[in-house]
Image 1: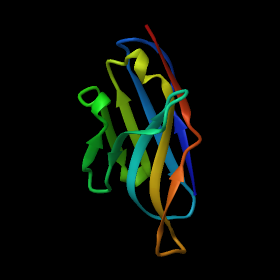
Image 2 (image 1 turned 30 degrees about the horizontal axis):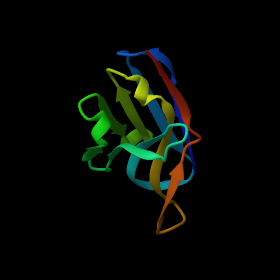
Image 3 (image 1 turned 90 degrees about the vertical axis):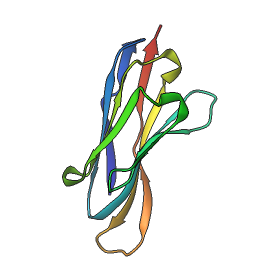
Image 4 (image 1 turned 120 degrees about the horizontal axis):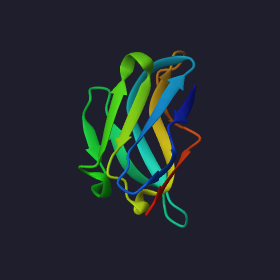
Length: 120
């Protein structure tokens, strides 16, 4: 099982980016999926998460600006980021709770990270 992220890049303040994260491999089911970020010198923090049923939670700093969604048929989670600020600059990581086809338990899987840079 692996997670592959895409959509990062550089943008000016006030701009938008959309991140995607696709899970592939021997997948039985996927529970929660989410996005985390880590800026230099800071701890990794939750940006947004979504359950398999579509319930969402957001970090306080991104509420009203970011939107998380998922396509269960494609095993993909998205993060639409609007009104970006320089303080949103970080490496963004995708995380998913995945049960492999041959197991009964779930395991947390992480993507490799994608850089988002917002200039003022």
